[in-house]
Length: 213
Image (cartoon, rainbow, N blue to C red; front, side, top):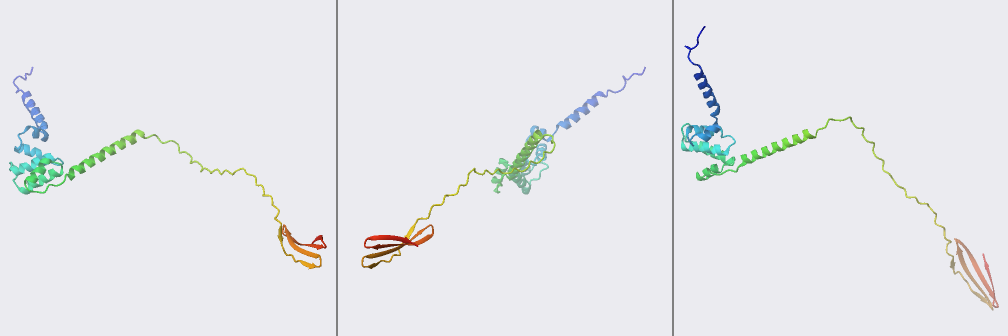
């Protein structure tokens, strides 16, 4: 029977290896930034790795350059760059640092743009979710309805011709009076319905006769 008692115990190196791997996985920049002393070289390196799109980490990186931390050269153009970018991302500390150094303070335009993009993404996601929730399987095509013919109502009225009225009689005085002794003659012209005639009245010694032609 073979005995393995004389072989070295391999469990301890395996445990150390697992511990080292776990430690390496857990040593994230976020963990280093929260656990390492502020403005130490490892703290500054973690802040620089998290600096993009973060106003506070951009300010921290600029401060590391201004202080001349190991690995961060103390050059004015570097820390002014990080302070300016941090102010554009809404960092009040970066804006105060620029004011302290007599530099113009920019607007937080990058922060506003990022907020607008985030709002647009949320709106697009909500719209896509609403569309997915309201989509129904397409049914058979419906025949297009015939165009409606407008209904025209004709009032029920009966045409009745207006009765013609007789033309008013008109008398045109075209009289001539002749007196011969006691004889008097008087003429007048009368028109009825467009028909005109001459009416003559003759009086002799008070006796009058009327003729028309």
